[in-house]
Length: 220
Image 1 (tube, rainbow, N blue to C red):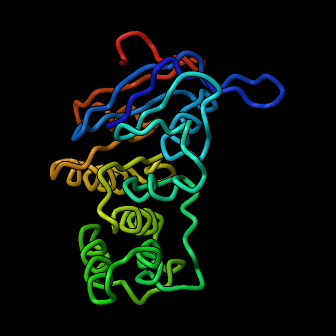
Image 2: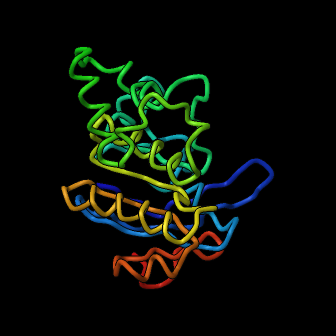
């Protein structure tokens, strides 16, 4: 599903965020990515949907070389990837329901099918009764669940999340990760970046550890 081969990422000025990173994430797998702040995890995640491009090496997503994709092909790549980032980018001038409907505005689904998918996504994350609320009325955990609903409404094969439990209490954080596990159990491939090692240990899944832009030994 995802394969990094000798990937490096350098920014202007010579800063190296990633150095010779290689690993594979199999279809249907759930894995965690951990590292200290500023060690390259956000950069690594952004390479998967082509938000960033590698400076060297290759990133394959479902067989496609992301670094070689033309700009016009990137939206098609992202249709099969659900993205949940720390900055949720929720629209506070629209309802919970309308936020989830946004990705479907660019799909070919008939209005009734789009509405059914939006309600199903909200139901999956426990927000079906809040669809007419404004996102600003939601708690931090509920806003994160809304971001997840929006990420999965297109039924992507791959979910990528950057610190989805940041700034949440332990109970809310566990509930968020349980939602990702539920999606994984129905075949969705999931990669989650988090600094919460106690939560990671609870699930017994593979852990990729980034240290100074390198993957640590045994993480591949």
